[in-house]
Image (cartoon, rainbow, N blue to C red; front, top):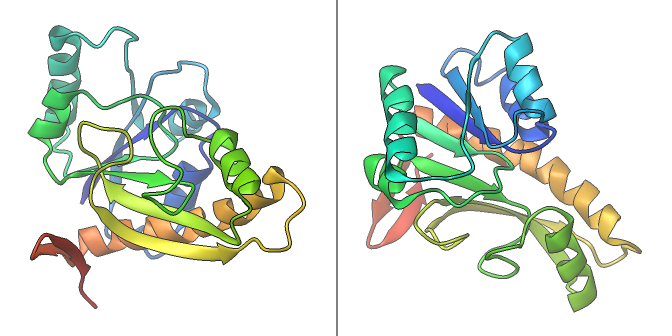
Length: 201
């Protein structure tokens, strides 16, 4: 299965995908796209000679069509948002319907939406006094963090003293959950039945 991974930051989830032994024989990362030409994730991709693409700040129709063309030429079958901070344009969502997924560092539908990324999420979780947090992989639609939930994993945070500790525990779960979901996609084991996402064994 051919993947494109969209990134904005240091690339820890991208590295988790690359390093996952179970994925090595069933996926091929054909492209890494970013809105930040200086981010570490993009540098990682370039060091591995993976094709890269800089997403322009202004997402007019021409720019989106150019991105779609880039992806289609590489026969991309699944787009993975791994710490990508920009809203995906409607035309791209329509062109890759149910083929774009995102990992979010909380248990959606709580603690999601515009501006809820990175430490913003973990601070909100900490200040709510929630006792569990976790990670969510979901389909991407035209709204931040509103697509159908594919998979979630929880972590106990009842004893944490800082938002940074929540971030550390959740990141560990992200690095397990995202490769798991990608593997299931590659095996064609993710279905939508009765308006719910089902993962087959």
